[in-house]
Length: 264
Image (cartoon, rainbow, N blue to C red; front, side):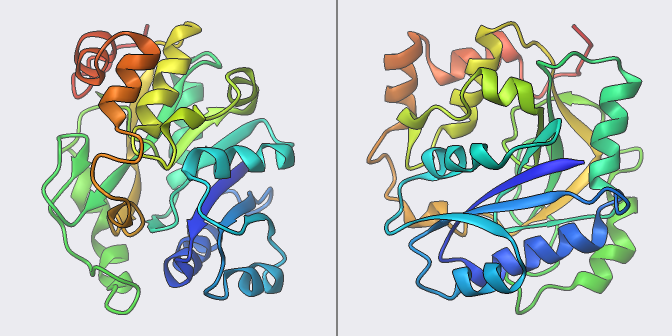
């Protein structure tokens, strides 16, 4: 069903958990998803793991950034859908079915942005379910309790909101190729989602949706915390330089994030 693209920077234990959750918790088992990984450095055994699991990958000998790393995987895409997932996430049952059904049930066009809802440890915006705690690493992750609880965490709580959450993010693969993937000006990655959303907006995309019953547990910032604050590419400065408006203006006055979604 999906070509899943993951960029991973020496994060093996988290990556293993992410991939295992995709294999165990995805609805589409008759037509399984393809998983592709870009490996940044790969000094922690990631490549050996991917070879063992027969997962195709690309590799760079240094961290070339989330955007460029993910874009390197575009050559593998053969399916109608591309799904971006971070390497520090655990997808919950039927996460994929919920995204596809939302697309079909609402008659959306190919320029639509459909993201899952993150369950996060720290208090976040209303497009997340937070704070919830089921562990902050693979070592203390309480998978059994999360699988018992997750359905009660969203039912009747979350409305369908406008969201620019980056991953898991489902896009039509023809859209991904039309916009040439992420804007690499935002590497090492801070601002990648805003830059991607603006690319889609600029070609007429208007539906940016957080799908309430597609859920993922996020261990939060296991890679981005290694990047110095504000650099080397400052998100706000880069966005203004490229697009002539602020990130805040784009999110609040164009996308209108965190408001009730209505089909456009």
